[in-house]
Image 1: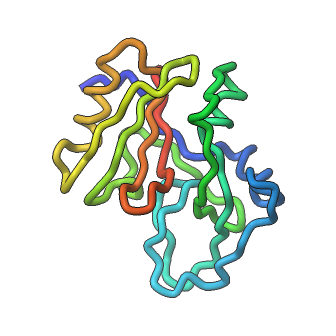
Image 2 (image 1 turned 45 degrees about the vertical axis):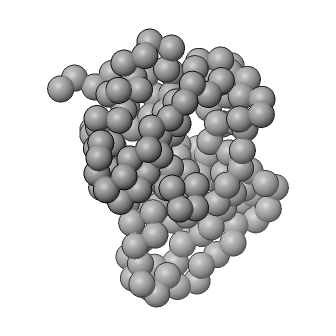
Length: 163
C-alpha cells in the first residue's frame, strides 16, 4: 500500500533545544535510571532500555508544527510530557510505523493545514491497526497531519504528515 503520509519523530534540532529548556520553559527532568525500561522515546520512536538514563520534557507538538507550516492551532495547542534520550541518538529513519508507537490503545487526532482538529480515531486492541486508522483519516483531503497518542495518559507518541 502506498502511504500518503510519513511518520516523524521529534526533529534533531528541536531535541537539542528541549535538552536545555523544554516547551514549558523548564530544564529537563532527568530519570536517572529507568529501572524496567520500555518507556516510549519520542526522539527515535523506540523504547527505553532497562537502566538507561532518559529525560522527561514538556513538548508542544502542534505548536512546533504550526511554527514550521504557518498553521494557527489556537485552542488545540497543548503541552505534554515526553521521554527523550539525554544524549543524541540515531533518531527515526522509517519507513512505516515504528514498533515503539504501537500499543493496545491508541488515539489518532487529525488536523487541517490551518491547525483545526478534524476528528480522530480510537484504536483498541489493534482494531483497526494504526496503518488502517491513518489510511482512513488521510482519505480525507483536508487532513494535513495526524498525531498518534496513548489513550490512558493522552501522551503524544508521534506525528504523521501528509506527503
